Length: 229
Ligand code: DC
Image 1 (cartoon, rainbow, N blue to C red):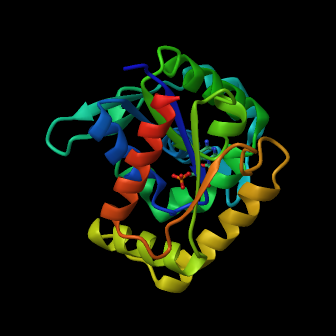
Image 2: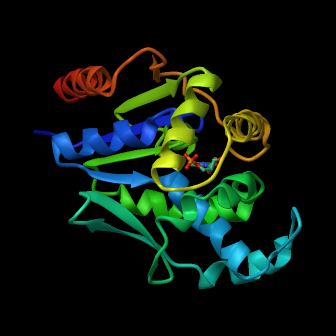
């Protein structure tokens, strides 16, 4: 069967990662969560004291970009890829509210995006990949054979993110998470560098009222059609 590139883009907390990861497992493709990469850069900034309040020392980050190594390793227990920053597993840290609140300004920087996009393109060179993010179908793989744009209401997305945080034992309120979702939607869609937008040939999926099982079936159907053409 021919191997393709599957690009899944959309708003934050829209369930993209779960869908993309499950699809990759079903069809034995590699799954790459590009949001995790921008989160890992943000964690690095926090750990290295590159933030002063909400102000980021851009120049210092630019100088230190070459010190940053981000990789993924399949966790055999969870069946999911874990994110590594300079050899250390940081899966839990990158999902914290602290990182969520700081990731937008970091991911808006041109030199950060350039470095991440180059790594993402290298990861997809052999195809057989499901990649989720904001600019996969528009910038990273404009030639992707299958592009999905996922959307759901901000209320539903905030509820989902809150459930995830609670499950990990993090403290957060619905209002706080809702505000973070709305703010990131705005920042992700209005930034100058690769703003979140739907690729012209993307298939839109509003999953507000869909179960994980229904989304899985729908995606498999899109995959079958894409490889058949
Ligand atoms: O998907 P996520 O919420 O984990 O992504 C974290 C942040 O990274 C999000 O606010 C936008 C940014 N991002 C991006 O700019 N480009 C991508 N390809 C993926 C994520």
